[in-house]
Length: 264
Image (cartoon, rainbow, N blue to C red):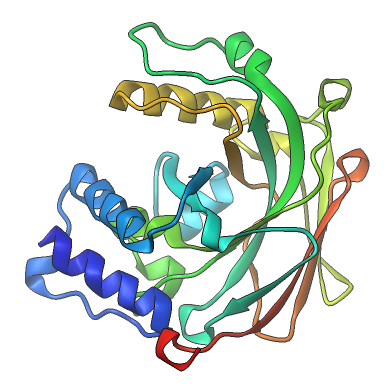
């Protein structure tokens, strides 16, 4: 079941199609969903450059019908430095989110003891502004996917764009830092660090301990995108998104129409 669903989702991700879930492909547990996601990571044949945390704001949880954060991989083939040109399929209903991104300066391996917020903070060597492009590969879009399918569908990640790292990040109050999302030079959404589980570092700490409990830690150099602080902004090919993080700088992405893998 997991293999066939992963194959269908990967084909849809590459070809811009949607997956009609069959009865045998339905997911029943979180473990099954993450197993499908792991299969997708292998099928991508791409290096994992970090991890995303999703569902870290009340708005996103209500929009996606989830109750707690979730995790997904950030793959090198879908991760781009800003400014970036990113291809998207309209059928996947792309949206953009502004997200605080942490870069780890030291590894945080799996262990029995819980990592404290101070330990996690001390492992961070830089913060970047980020934009994640998300979209669903099943009918009904992001709102109709359901928590398990969102996890299985690569955390609904389409692509990830990150700005220049800021190493003096501890001088910035991330919790109060305002972030503004602009689409085609017009303001779309405004948020701040408190919209991300109360503080972006709380999202990072959740991920560190979640992966530690799985027996898989985080590595030095990993990027961690901590979830939307400006809500979901719908976009389409031809749009340009820019997220302004004040002293952390900005991040830009130009969206273009994608082509099925066989036509590239």
